[in-house]
Length: 426
Image (cartoon, rainbow, N blue to C red; front, side, top):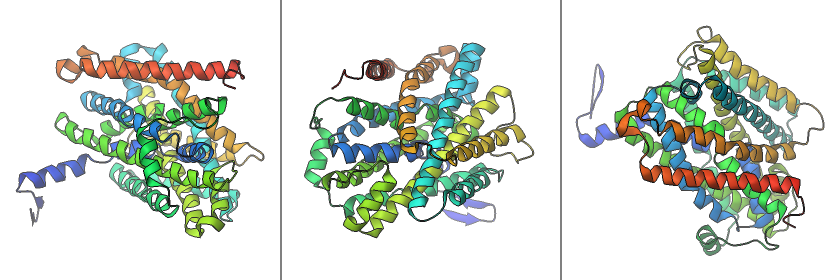
């Protein structure tokens, strides 16, 4: 590889592959790691704090599910060059298009509230008033996207994703019993007390936060925004696999930190309380690390989820909806993003909002609407008129995907049963 006046000249095949991958890399990692948002931090740490290491195996089960779902999204985005909302409107009509869009916008907005709730909780624990931290965060999140450069935004967000490597440092500091970690990652074990309503609720919350509806819309729009081609598909798949693996490992690290609280019988309502309680036991690095990583998770989640809403709404309205456009070139798109961020931030500043209850409940809500979102994706990936014989799902894809859909519906029914019959799992 040499440098000329015109740029970089790639001479060998392996250098060309590396450069091509780096050009494609980004959407898969971002969509996965941004899903380790504030709600995920709260859910995974509560799982560790309430049940120790007993739910680690669930993360391993969810890894291939995450990959298979998002691989379909990447394939659909490359094949159509359009976002997910636009394709649902185009192939299923306005009624179903509006149904999917309203579901998305509702759960996304509720999720945004949880992101700013986490920023408020974490920075309050560090002595920063919510009336400073929340507005400043909202302004910063707005400035991230109004630069008129997709590549600049992507580089910033990939950097934020890589900051989550710190979770592995925190997990090693609390010295878990690694043999038990390995065993519980492979062998499903039942927590003491058996199946209870809180266990069912938490399992559904974990599924809801690991695979969220907004991810389908975000990655497809992101792939279309990046203008990837069929030649890039294998690299997009690798990007997605790396993102899924990294995200599940980070989630496991969060659970290990929560387990440290479980071992020391720490009672907490949210990760910020756990971080403060762990300070005298594990040291200030763990305490401050958890709090700052909560903020990082919330920032990642907010920018990705707000963009998912802005892209989807812009596609349906027929507006310019691209980060390649300047603020004045796509006013409706940027206004949607800014409105989502600003309104969610304002709600969090309302006194006495039960933030932790909102955070966990939103994950369950996401788990409830996920099956219908995946059904649309499954039907689109079997549309031969749209994709042709080469890019539609293979039979094995369909077997796996319908199994996932059935399991998700079963979890949704379990939640409904729990709500209607509170003593069912006592």
